[in-house]
Amino acid sequence: MVRSIIHVDMDAFYAAIEERDNPKLRGKPIVVGGGNPHSRGVVSTASYAAREYGIHSAMPLRQAYLRCPQATFLPVNMDKYKGVSRQIHRIFRRFTPTVEPVSLDEAFLDVTGADAVSIGKNIKYLITKKLRLTASIGISYNKFLAKLASEWEKPDGFTVIPSQNIRDFLSPLSVRRIWGVGPRTEAQLNDMGIFTIGDLQQLDRGFLQNAFGKWGEDLYDLSRGIDHRPVKSSRRPKSFGEEQTFYTDEGDPEVLRACLAEFAQSLGERLQSRGLAGRTITLKIRYADFVTNTKSLTLVNPIAGPGELYKCSLLLLQRIKLDQRKIRLIGLSVSNFIYPGEPYQLTLW
Ligand code: TTP
Ligand code: MG
Image 1 (tube, rainbow, N blue to C red):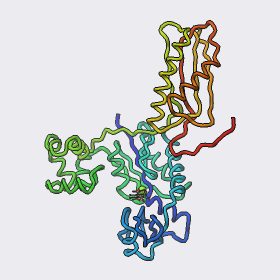
Image 2: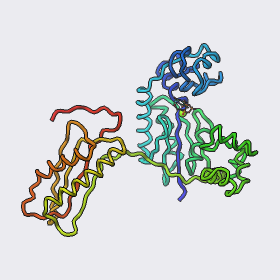
Image 3: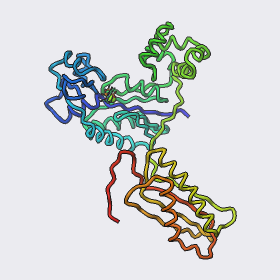
């Protein structure tokens, strides 16, 4: 199935927010980064008015000052930009859950099966109307082309790259337009006499493989507008769980405890590998007659370790009447996650 991918990239993101919040700065050259043009910092971003003086991201602030001493130099207000980023992502999720954030101001959306152009226009409208900022939007049938499209007429752009004649469309462009080709690869390609995407299209797959390994195959495909990478939505999981159904109904508490130890181990590893901790532990028991009983425990302090998870699961097991009834299924889950770096509200029991 042909996919519909939207790439959204905010224009001069940090600078645009500062400009919005201080009308005196409107249309003026603004340089965000460090705040003091005589310090050793670098430019995070510059407004489009400042870019006319040749100022760009990663340039030393002192150099930016030499180019445009009358620019307003502002410090980075990360909390503010993160807040705006959350608002943008909330707008995206109105249209699809398949949103892959790339950075604070950039994301891919997979809207296959829907009217991508109308969604793109709506997103642009909402960003302008609700956030008083502008975004550039690119639409195509894969990630590479959608990103290329959003860069096409920045700022405030809206570009659709259709699949027809894609080879000819790409052919005159610089190899630098290929996603992943930075200054070093560009220099390497130029040394080989390859300057445009069209030059790349002339080469065969084996040659590129020899020269660049796996990346050579990607170059071969990308130069033809082929890119199968999926849009990976990073929906945050709400819980992790493990469960087991017994072959023959089980009544031995020792076996149940062994299951719980195994679950705690695996859940602990899953949490720790993602830097998560959970506050709620839930034990589920299904009896042979299919009646299901769950017990949960919410802790003041989040836990992530297998040992602590196991201890909690045993406390919960004690609260379940095992009497003579046989058990068909046992499960353990952890939820109420605390994400890395996220403060949590201390609550009383
Ligand atoms: P970009 O999207 O690369 O740049 P931009 O949004 O400022 O400008 P445009 O997209 O219109 O070209 O990056 C988004 C934000 O990330 C940018 O506003 C500031 C920050 N950033 C840095 O802090 N350092 C950098 O080197 C870059 C490239 C960006
Ligand atoms: Mg941007």
